[in-house]
Amino acid sequence: DAKTTQPPSMDCAEGRAANLPCNHSTISGNEYVYWYRQIHSQGPQYIIHGLKNNETNEMASLIITEDRKSSTLILPHATLRDTAVYYCIVRGDDKIIFGKGTRLHILP
Amino acid sequence: GAGVSQSPRYKVAKRGQDVALRCDPISGHVSLFWYQQALGQGPEFLTYFQNEAQLDKSGLPSDRFFAERPEGSVSTLKIQRTQQEDSAVYLCASSFPSQPQHFGDGTRLSIL
Image (cartoon, rainbow over all chains, first blue to last red):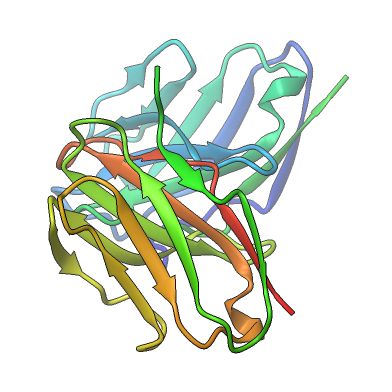
């Protein structure tokens, strides 16, 4: 079973920041938090990952709480192309266990 | 640059037929994974290779499913005596060990 809990869906206005929450209260010390997204009819796309420090790249920012039991993915300026299912994953070994993700709708 | 390539993109087969799905990983990637994604669900892990060695096949749903990667590069997922419940998108991913996985766009398999 997936070790994360995410809301099934969220809406965000175009141009605003999208903040996607994820709970992973049973995360172990050596497990990373990964985020992927899947646009319709495509394979999952890697976004970002982190262990305990906040991370930022050209796509997004990842904020991990100090106790590591939850995290937030931030898309700073959402566009219509960001409409997708976003998966938060806790990964300790090589295989990925996906949950159901959050379906993000960007509203024009 | 070349990403993970999967073929065919779509496959329709009659129940009982055998099918073979191909995955060309990113050049140099040691690790290769297969996932199955049913409609409306997240991908589910099937099997994992490191080079030519199949290190984990715990997700294969039955002995009708078989995967190979004989030269440590291209991989084939074979399904024998297909059944309707095998209808799904089959995703392949590759990576360097413990690095982010890069996914192909999958093969959509429909069993009639």
